[in-house]
Amino acid sequence: MPDDSARHDDAPLPRLLWIMRRLRDPETGCPWDVAQDFTSIAPYTIEEAYEVADAIERAEWPELEAELGDLLLQVVFHGQIGAEAGLFDFDTIAQRIGDKMVARHPHVFGDESRDKTAAQQTRDWEAIKAAERAARDQSGALDGVARGLPALTRALKLQKRAARVGFDWPQTGEVLDKIVEEAGELAEARDELTQAEMEEEFGDLLFVMVNLGRHLGVDAETALRAANAKFTRRFSHIESQLAARGKSPADSDLSEMDALWDAAKAVERGEDAP
Image (cartoon, rainbow, N blue to C red):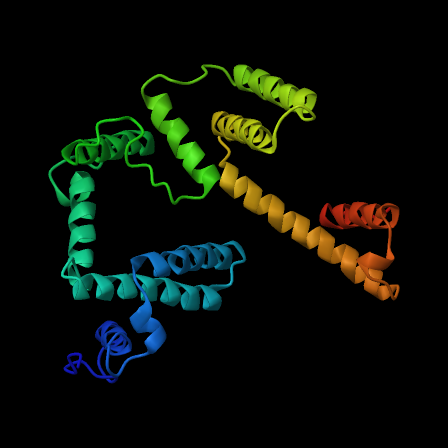
């Protein structure tokens, strides 16, 4: 049986840790929770992080509170699995991140001056992280960039790492030229390529697009999320306008829906709908 020293009337965090121990108890816990491991839980952890970001983007603060709780539960879940395997537990997780924050902020917790620009602080932060990677025998410039990151985010991190050691186009115009080249090659050869080759060429084009965003100071993941949200708003406008006409998209055609799309754009811009 799990330790019952923490009960449901305890402080919130000890109570949550107690709940997870009870859920994971092989004899009296929840069969689903007991069956999980790091690998099976990882997709839920990623999903919860995205739901936190979504609530922030929509400025839904009560929902954010709930989503942060869901994300915290993921940390507690991983911590309990680690404790059962003798690897680590929630306390050691908290201790380690606390130690890391202190070590990475010598200008706050140490003797260094706080009189630094944001750019200088970023350089210092990266230097400390580089030293940490070296201590873990991660000497390559690209070592430590997590493979599980969203592809656009990982592409940006890889490019930033390479740029720090001088592997980068010096001018934005050169990136634009590369985009034109890659897009042209893909368009010209699309009928001759296998599906695998098509995917590779398309990936190259996306990678260069991320590079263009970096040169322009635009985060590709953030920009695409915004584009997704805009598309959703405008398509919802199309659906609502069609519904007012007693129709659905399946009953419409591209010409009608395109006109409604333009009307949605005009509404967003504060213009009179065409």
